[in-house]
Length: 138
Image 1 (spheres, rainbow, N blue to C red):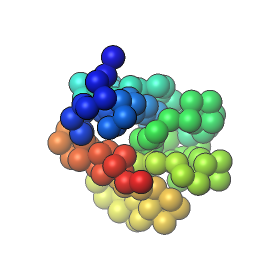
Image 2 (cartoon, one colour; image 1 turned 90 degrees about the vertical axis):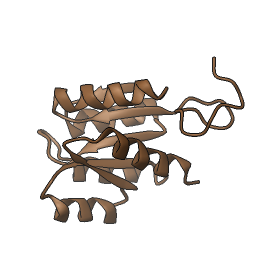
Image 3 (tube, helix red, strand yellow; image 1 turned 120 degrees about the horizontal axis):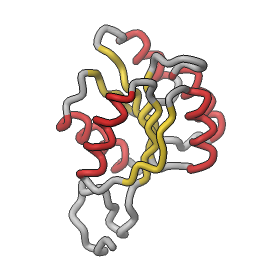
């Protein structure tokens, strides 16, 4: 159990609440990487989805504190999934995951409500910095 005075940035808020994260990405490799990063920092991964359709349903079910959302996926792309998540929850904290060279898609996602983005290949330090920036904003 987390202590109430846990250090900031360890996946636990000042009130001892463990942050819950949903990962939506069709790449099993990226999901595994993100899971390892988050779990090592004491975040709780509540679910993973391999397409936008599944991800929107899981968001509605789990109502996580944060979502990482791939832009390019089968069935429903990340921009469409983001739009549906934002329609369901205007306060949703979504961080897009994008391959390099997809700046136009990232811009579109930020305009649609994404709070930040991470580029592949993943850099552990940058992933954690961007996640913490989004979670620390009230």
